[in-house]
Image 1 (cartoon, helix red, strand yellow):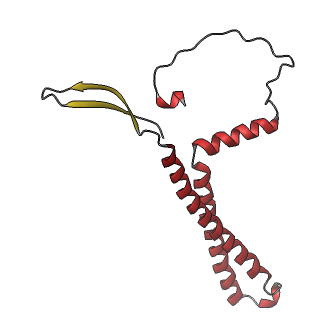
Image 2 (tube, rainbow, N blue to C red; image 1 turned 90 degrees about the vertical axis):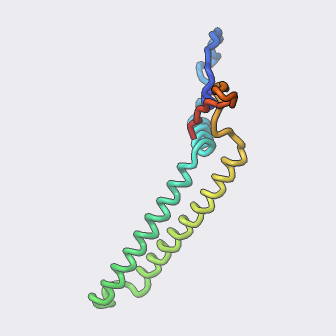
Length: 145
């Protein structure tokens, strides 16, 4: 978080003793997965956007498959496949894609609420100076999002 604000930083050298078993306490796969999940979900809304794209993809794919299925139903005899089985698969795919798309929209709203609830500044004022009329002007540095 200190690097996020963008102020000047300096390092403080120190001597650390060697660990007893040469491993950090969280150096297991489970610990690494937990830290990765926490980092991705805490600082990014990209997983929510990915769910939206997946929802759109599966909905569009199922819609195209339904169109192909209806066209084949008119062109081929219906005895070539089990009755209703493909229809059931396509409906499950379609409604699953719609649910994923709906959940991603709700998730995007919740993500925006979460970002707003953090109350982080949009910019940090680097310096204030006066112009020739005595008005104070601010030099802002926009922070990365």
